[in-house]
Image (cartoon, rainbow, N blue to C red; front, side, top):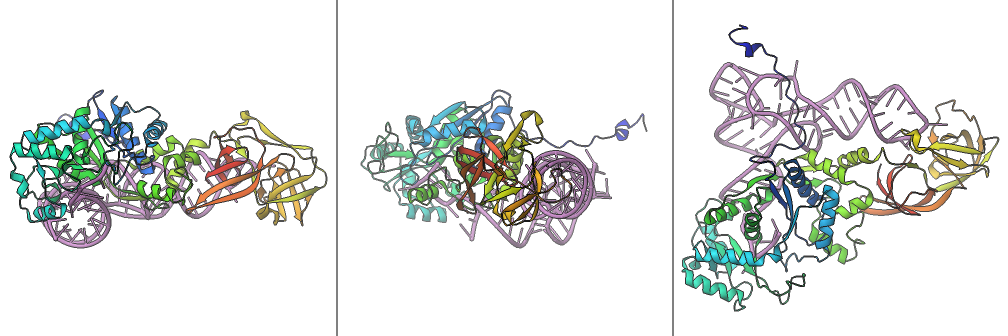
Amino acid sequence: MEAEAPHLLEKREKKERRQGLPELKNAVKGKVVLRFAPNPNGPLSFGHARGIVINGYYAKEWDGELILRFDDTDTVVKPPLPEAYNQIPEEAEWLLGFKPHRIVIASEQMPHYYEHAVSMLERGFGYVCQCSGESFKEYRVSKSECPCRVNDIELNLELWTKMTNGTFVPGDAVVRVKTAMDLKNPALRDWPALRIQNTEEHPHPRKSIGSKYRVWPLLDFQSAVEDYIQGVTHIIRGKDLMDSTRKQTLLYQHFGWDYPETLYWGRVKVHEWGGFSTSQMRRDIEDGLFTGWDDPRLPTLTALRNRGITAKALRDFWVELGVTQKDISVPLSTLYSHNTKCIDDDAPRLSFIRHPEKLHLKGEHPASVSVEVHPNHPSRGMRTFDVTSKDIWVEHEDSVKTEVRLKGFTNIENVGGSAKIGSIERNDRRPIIHWLPDTSVIPATLIVAEDGEVRRLEGLIESHTYPAGTMVQLERIGYARIIDNSTLIFTHS
RNA sequence: GCUCGUAUAGUGUAGUGGCCCAUCAUGAAGGACUCUCAUUCCUUCGACCCGGAUUCAAAUUCCGGUACGAGCACCA
């Protein structure tokens, strides 16, 4: 047997678990081009992070390029927010750890879209349709062709001119891609490629664009043409855009182009957040329901960052979820767990006393007490407290316990605000509490965003010299980020 | 209604016919360490939607259900 079928004797190695994301199909090192294309109608949110992280991961893995593209072709329903054009690239860079290789703004590419629209009309696979949305819907449902479908090229070009020169107003006409009205999938039947927007009343917020164009491409057309122009090789996006892929593939066939490899992910809901849309957040902020895009209750990148969620935690989180097409619902604890791994080793320990109660010490004790800055890193030094005043602060909740141990200091017996010093050595299993001497405290506020509310916990923070932005661990409470001398924001426990 | 898609432990995820009485993470429970309810470490718990078919062999293929989601916008 050994001679005849040696492979049967070979011990097959246990398959190794795949690390990170699955391999990209048809990818060539150095030639991969990916893109992430948000609508700049607000800053990036948690969900956008998936697009950036996943596309960025592959761009890096394949020595390719990541394009950040602003799909800002709607000035009426989802008008762009001017600040977003600066904020989004900055947020993307923070999240990725590198700058996107190219930035493309769709509203600056309008000449290309017009050129392709005209080409489509000239080559006969597009037509100007003057049917109303309602009546076209009937044609689509009944698989019948609308009267405009038979327009000859000259007529289509004439109508196109009427679209662009202002003869037609919104609703009068759209440009459609000629597919087939008997396609199985109704979504694909002669889909609309460009429409007219009233840019006098709704000018594009970018000054250089403003009311310059009346005819604007719709997503499926704009995105398809732009992907071709930019040489995108792989598209990874939500599965809600599956029919978009099919529509665009039909357009690519008309033009004689090859459609990129496409991958999809499903819907993600965060249990604690429910549904937030950028448009809704924008309205709520304008209505004063939130203080701004960085309101800690909001799932925006800027809010998460401000709260102390690290870019790496977000990256690890999204890579762990992968690119499955399943619709999933994840608890925030998963993200927090990644974040803890990212920050704990660096976070200096500090005490914060919520609802402080003063205790007066009675008895003999050392004049000063030292505790570690970080218990796993003695080399980072000690925090030393002067306790000669004998007045200390503990949390209200701890002040009602009689037998406790002040961390790093002494056992006490606490009765009615007066704490009798017990053993300096730890000699029993009594609970250990955190405390601060009144000589080294600063009144401070801990901002806690939980369950859709923001609570401001007044208390005392241990005096320190850490700069704003430092991630610290508040002993027995959790991680927090320093905002300023007297303000911290709670990250998670 | 038409079309498309997905279904593995509580939550995510690996797995493309035999390495799988199913991986890893998270979670929960217990324990070790620790002068934090932190970190780290150890142990335990727990899953292939249902029904058929193909096959010597199916989480993996096929058919039929069921459930959930998405598209059918002159939004992205």
